[in-house]
Image (cartoon, rainbow, N blue to C red; front, side, top):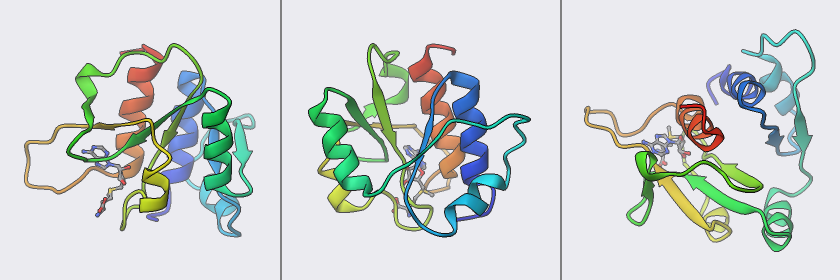
Length: 137
Ligand SMILES: C[S@@+](CC[C@H](N)C(=O)[O-])C[C@H]1O[C@@H](n2cnc3c(N)ncnc32)[C@H](O)[C@@H]1O
């Protein structure tokens, strides 16, 4: 949702040495192109079934980290840099991470907020977490 989010996230992925994994919807390529100012191709994985891919990644030893406001979530300040392969799961701008994907997470991380807003923009939230995981902050 909201135009430039996927392209913005691809730029952050490029900056921290990550790849962007996207679902197989027809609108995704256009959405990734918007907001993307990279002058070379970014690293984009097209994932057939996101849930099956997450399960396979988890079985292969990847850490699956959701970015979501949740009771049991780790606070961003306590998140340590990734020691191994980590998959960061972001939610839909309107509905968040769907319940079936929450079941696939090893942990969730939340970004504390003190203002009146209920949540951050997804590209902002994802970028903050990616920088912390990359150890660049
Ligand atoms: C606009 S929010 C979704 C709000 C939605 N109403 C909900 O029920 O979750 C879009 C996504 O950005 C991320 N996000 C936004 N603010 C966050 C925060 N403070 N901490 C962690 N994740 C956040 C989450 O991945 C969330 O699913």
